[in-house]
Image (cartoon, rainbow, N blue to C red; front, top):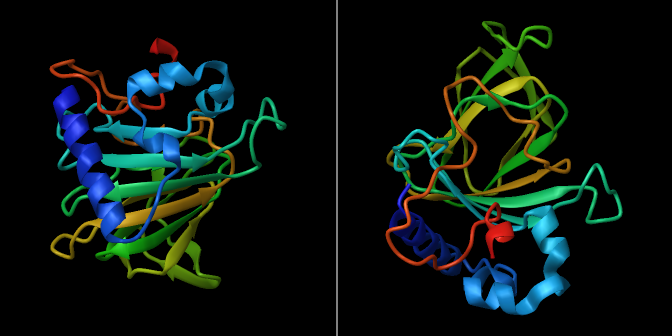
Length: 225
């Protein structure tokens, strides 16, 4: 991705969050220079990788497969005293975007349509032994109500509603085409970035072409500051 594309995505996400009266921590607005000025006092933020995370998952088509993420809270399984025992994120997605198909081995997560349009979700079971996708019915809870759907069947969430994704449920989600942009929330077990198993050819973080200065650093770039 070009840095200019990342900067545009951040500015767009900031405007959509403001429009929906959602505020981020103060350091969400810091420039790279401001990050440097705060030195060691923000080591915890750096280690937990809180902050901006814009990715096209290595697909080179951000408007189709990609999202703006912002991690608000996180912890560490290796160092339980470092953060909190859960993770909270915003996933800000344009109409037409989706996540690549993936599942988790240990993480359970609630995916919540916080604001905007409709959230479209597709589910499949993954074989715990092989990781391969199965063509079997999937049982999930949606706001505490159990529901069973066919593999790959469309589930649609309106704002305020959520779905609980347990380990080995492969999923794709994004705004239902034509319904508008969506602000999703994720509340889950601590996220260390190693519990993502993709069923499409992807990369978690994009390579970046530096065609203009960064507005804000990404959460995986703090070591360069």
